Amino acid sequence: MNRPLISIAAAMLIASAACAPAAAPATAPQAEASAQPPQPLVFFDYDLSVCVVEHGAFRQVPIKYNIRTGDSTYNGQSFGQVFPVSGEYAAATQWYVDNEVVLWMSTRYVKYGRPRELGPTDVTRVGEFRGVSVFVETGVTGRPYVIYLPVRPTCEFHPYEVTEHGSAVRGG
Image 1 (cartoon, rainbow, N blue to C red):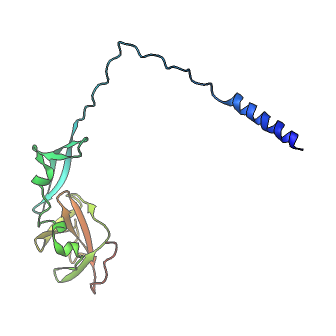
Image 2 (tube, helix red, strand yellow):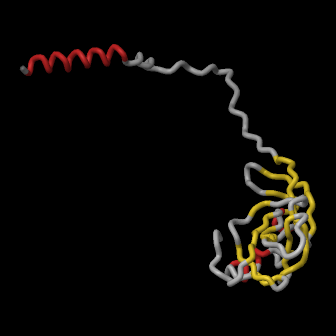
Image 3 (cartoon, helix red, strand yellow):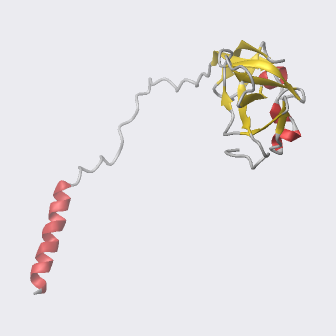
Protein backbone atom coordinates (compact mmCIF):
# COMPACT_ATOMS: atom_id res chain seq x y z
CA MET A 1 0.00 0.00 0.00
CA ASN A 2 2.90 2.36 0.51
CA ARG A 3 4.02 1.99 -3.08
CA PRO A 4 1.16 4.10 -4.60
CA LEU A 5 1.90 6.91 -2.11
CA ILE A 6 5.52 7.06 -3.24
CA SER A 7 4.41 7.14 -6.86
CA ILE A 8 1.94 9.95 -6.18
CA ALA A 9 4.56 11.90 -4.24
CA ALA A 10 7.08 11.43 -7.03
CA ALA A 11 4.51 12.58 -9.60
CA MET A 12 3.73 15.69 -7.57
CA LEU A 13 7.44 16.50 -7.29
CA ILE A 14 7.93 16.15 -11.03
CA ALA A 15 4.82 18.24 -11.77
CA SER A 16 5.89 21.03 -9.44
CA ALA A 17 9.37 21.09 -10.95
CA ALA A 18 7.87 21.34 -14.43
CA CYS A 19 5.72 24.34 -13.36
CA ALA A 20 8.54 26.20 -11.59
CA PRO A 21 10.02 29.26 -13.31
CA ALA A 22 13.32 28.89 -15.07
CA ALA A 23 16.39 29.39 -12.91
CA ALA A 24 18.16 32.74 -13.19
CA PRO A 25 21.51 32.79 -14.99
CA ALA A 26 24.48 32.13 -12.75
CA THR A 27 25.93 35.59 -13.38
CA ALA A 28 24.11 38.85 -13.97
CA PRO A 29 24.98 40.75 -17.13
CA GLN A 30 27.56 43.47 -16.58
CA ALA A 31 26.32 47.05 -16.60
CA GLU A 32 27.60 49.17 -19.40
CA ALA A 33 30.72 51.10 -18.47
CA SER A 34 29.20 54.31 -19.87
CA ALA A 35 26.24 54.29 -17.41
CA GLN A 36 25.65 57.60 -15.61
CA PRO A 37 25.86 57.71 -11.81
CA PRO A 38 22.45 58.13 -10.12
CA GLN A 39 21.27 61.70 -9.91
CA PRO A 40 20.73 63.15 -6.41
CA LEU A 41 17.12 63.60 -5.31
CA VAL A 42 15.91 67.18 -5.51
CA PHE A 43 13.24 68.34 -3.07
CA PHE A 44 11.10 71.33 -3.81
CA ASP A 45 9.30 73.78 -1.60
CA TYR A 46 5.62 73.95 -2.44
CA ASP A 47 3.86 77.30 -2.48
CA LEU A 48 0.61 76.97 -0.54
CA SER A 49 -2.03 79.24 0.90
CA VAL A 50 -3.15 78.65 4.49
CA CYS A 51 -6.13 80.04 6.40
CA VAL A 52 -5.11 81.89 9.55
CA VAL A 53 -7.31 83.44 12.23
CA GLU A 54 -5.45 86.15 14.08
CA HIS A 55 -6.92 88.67 16.53
CA GLY A 56 -10.37 87.39 15.58
CA ALA A 57 -9.93 88.03 11.85
CA PHE A 58 -9.46 85.55 9.01
CA ARG A 59 -6.90 85.81 6.25
CA GLN A 60 -5.12 83.62 3.74
CA VAL A 61 -1.34 83.66 3.98
CA PRO A 62 1.17 82.30 1.45
CA ILE A 63 3.57 79.73 2.88
CA LYS A 64 6.33 77.53 1.55
CA TYR A 65 6.15 73.86 2.55
CA ASN A 66 9.31 71.72 2.35
CA ILE A 67 8.34 68.11 1.63
CA ARG A 68 11.72 66.79 2.80
CA THR A 69 11.69 68.37 6.26
CA GLY A 70 7.96 68.98 6.73
CA ASP A 71 8.71 72.61 7.67
CA SER A 72 6.48 75.51 6.71
CA THR A 73 7.74 79.07 6.39
CA TYR A 74 6.06 82.44 5.98
CA ASN A 75 8.22 85.25 4.53
CA GLY A 76 11.32 83.18 5.25
CA GLN A 77 10.47 82.60 8.93
CA SER A 78 9.15 79.49 10.63
CA PHE A 79 5.35 79.42 10.50
CA GLY A 80 5.21 78.61 14.22
CA GLN A 81 7.35 81.65 15.07
CA VAL A 82 5.22 84.03 13.03
CA PHE A 83 1.91 82.49 14.14
CA PRO A 84 2.52 81.02 17.62
CA VAL A 85 -0.18 79.28 19.64
CA SER A 86 -0.58 82.13 22.13
CA GLY A 87 -3.26 83.10 24.66
CA GLU A 88 -5.65 84.17 21.90
CA TYR A 89 -6.07 80.46 21.05
CA ALA A 90 -7.83 77.99 23.33
CA ALA A 91 -5.05 75.37 23.07
CA ALA A 92 -2.73 77.70 25.01
CA THR A 93 -5.10 77.98 27.99
CA GLN A 94 -5.42 75.72 31.00
CA TRP A 95 -9.22 75.93 31.04
CA TYR A 96 -9.29 74.40 27.56
CA VAL A 97 -6.88 71.61 28.49
CA ASP A 98 -8.93 70.89 31.64
CA ASN A 99 -12.22 70.75 29.66
CA GLU A 100 -13.79 73.46 31.79
CA VAL A 101 -17.25 74.80 31.09
CA VAL A 102 -17.28 78.05 29.10
CA LEU A 103 -19.65 80.63 30.58
CA TRP A 104 -20.42 83.13 27.84
CA MET A 105 -23.34 85.56 27.79
CA SER A 106 -24.83 83.90 30.90
CA THR A 107 -24.92 80.54 29.11
CA ARG A 108 -22.90 77.42 29.95
CA TYR A 109 -21.17 75.65 27.05
CA VAL A 110 -19.18 72.39 27.00
CA LYS A 111 -16.82 70.98 24.37
CA TYR A 112 -18.61 69.03 21.69
CA GLY A 113 -16.85 66.62 19.34
CA ARG A 114 -13.43 67.34 17.96
CA PRO A 115 -11.83 70.50 16.57
CA ARG A 116 -12.51 71.24 12.92
CA GLU A 117 -11.31 73.63 10.24
CA LEU A 118 -13.68 76.50 9.50
CA GLY A 119 -13.38 79.39 7.09
CA PRO A 120 -14.43 83.03 7.00
CA THR A 121 -17.83 82.27 5.47
CA ASP A 122 -18.63 79.54 8.02
CA VAL A 123 -18.47 81.57 11.23
CA THR A 124 -18.62 85.15 12.46
CA ARG A 125 -16.84 86.62 15.47
CA VAL A 126 -19.35 87.73 18.14
CA GLY A 127 -17.29 88.23 21.28
CA GLU A 128 -14.55 86.98 23.52
CA PHE A 129 -14.07 84.53 26.40
CA ARG A 130 -10.96 84.97 28.59
CA GLY A 131 -8.99 86.49 25.73
CA VAL A 132 -10.12 83.92 23.11
CA SER A 133 -12.46 85.05 20.32
CA VAL A 134 -15.92 83.49 20.24
CA PHE A 135 -17.52 82.69 16.89
CA VAL A 136 -20.98 81.47 15.86
CA GLU A 137 -22.25 80.07 12.60
CA THR A 138 -22.78 82.86 10.11
CA GLY A 139 -26.39 84.03 10.17
CA VAL A 140 -27.22 82.79 13.68
CA THR A 141 -29.10 85.34 15.78
CA GLY A 142 -30.08 85.28 19.43
CA ARG A 143 -28.55 82.88 21.90
CA PRO A 144 -26.51 80.37 19.87
CA TYR A 145 -26.77 76.69 20.69
CA VAL A 146 -23.18 76.17 19.48
CA ILE A 147 -20.19 78.50 19.75
CA TYR A 148 -16.74 77.98 18.21
CA LEU A 149 -13.41 78.87 19.81
CA PRO A 150 -10.19 79.02 17.77
CA VAL A 151 -7.78 76.34 18.98
CA ARG A 152 -4.78 77.21 16.80
CA PRO A 153 -3.88 79.90 14.25
CA THR A 154 -4.69 77.64 11.28
CA CYS A 155 -8.47 78.19 11.42
CA GLU A 156 -8.98 75.17 13.68
CA PHE A 157 -12.03 75.63 15.93
CA HIS A 158 -13.53 73.56 18.72
CA PRO A 159 -17.33 73.62 18.96
CA TYR A 160 -19.01 74.07 22.33
CA GLU A 161 -22.71 73.35 22.86
CA VAL A 162 -25.17 74.61 25.44
CA THR A 163 -25.43 72.63 28.66
CA GLU A 164 -27.88 73.30 31.44
CA HIS A 165 -25.95 71.54 34.19
CA GLY A 166 -22.26 71.59 33.25
CA SER A 167 -22.49 67.85 32.61
CA ALA A 168 -19.68 65.63 31.45
CA VAL A 169 -17.97 66.55 28.20
CA ARG A 170 -19.20 64.60 25.17
CA GLY A 171 -16.84 63.60 22.39
CA GLY A 172 -13.86 65.50 23.81
